[in-house]
Image 1 (spheres, rainbow, N blue to C red):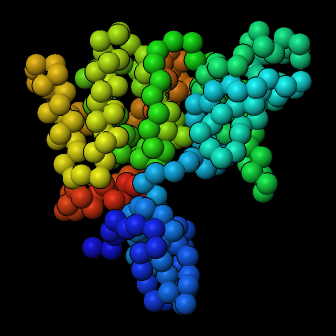
Image 2 (cartoon, one colour):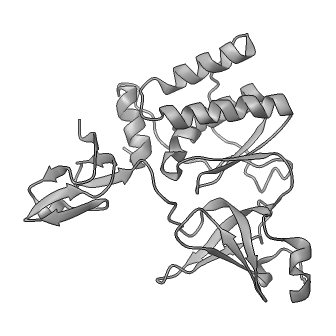
Length: 268
């Protein structure tokens, strides 16, 4: 197995040329800088199991307005860096003195990372049919690096949760999850998501979530394979859709390795 769970300072390799993300070199040896999953394929890198979200252009995320300035909304994006939403990136023309009428401190938005420069200035936009202020539903926060497990292989986990809870569930790349639906259905969805958050490192996760849903609903739960072609958020404006990552399945691979592959974002 070319992956394992490691802690900060753990020895990984005696070849410094293999050092990659999440590692450091000391005395020509490679050590882990974080608690996470180490991969030894081609290079030595460690994906953290906890920590802040690092934004990238194209990420769909959920932000919270923390300040309103003359021409920008300052947005908390669960990162060491604030997001900047310029007035020109709002979907309609408004005047500077009207900004707080449309987005005020504490408001949540589904937004897109438009650009990140070398100085980590994070520019956001709402100029997209998929994006909007969030006015209803509930929000929870999970570890950003665990987002692939909430989505599942080829979207299987999120598809099952949406189908069985009858809720719309949007998973932001920064680990904020927006749920809309009836109160009891949202509660079931949230409890299921929090169980995933607690147990992502344990094999057999899908089976446990299926059993949990069955127990909560008192009936049969089926894991449905997502359709190969799904409507995009832009095509279906009535509900938010999950940010999906294509992770190929390997039927011969143990599930424990599949979990590590998803956390590491590997595609074989």
